[in-house]
Image (cartoon, rainbow, N blue to C red):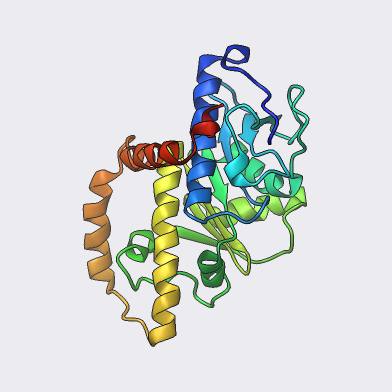
Length: 252
């Protein structure tokens, strides 16, 4: 059983709310199969701070993460407080540069799902061949594989390659998805995961039908009408209700 560390009374109400959101995100991702053993990360900025973040305890499966055992760290990945769990710095080196440099990187997820990794390992990356992928056309950055992201000097190239986008496909590796809110990040990732799943299945059947630039523009224009501060909120709340019915221990 994972150790429970904090109570609601030991941190601000804002931080506790952020902990609940992030713990829910880990459980939702785990329920949907978007996790890789004890690896990969979802990170979230602590409200009211510039350089304090919450991250999963290294060594726990994502369905063991709770609001109280999330680890609070600073912008360099140093633990804040007496949480006994270690932090996988190989993951936060990558996340920290985005959190520090990009105003839209409040919540960040990096995964190794087979379908997203397959697209990252394919020449040309994500193709505008399905309903979901058309939303991302022209809105994804790509970064050449340099090995495990543990070197701070790679950060400048990551920033240059993501540009103003909120999705960065690490070639031969996996995606990084960012959001201004945790529910925005979730729905963007949901859509990207679907886009990659469909692309992989389509490739197994034959040559894809690519969508024209004109139709992509119309598709994105109409889709952008939903890009409000509440983008993804109803989806996140619905999946939170789902995991509550399965195991509400994430709230501890």
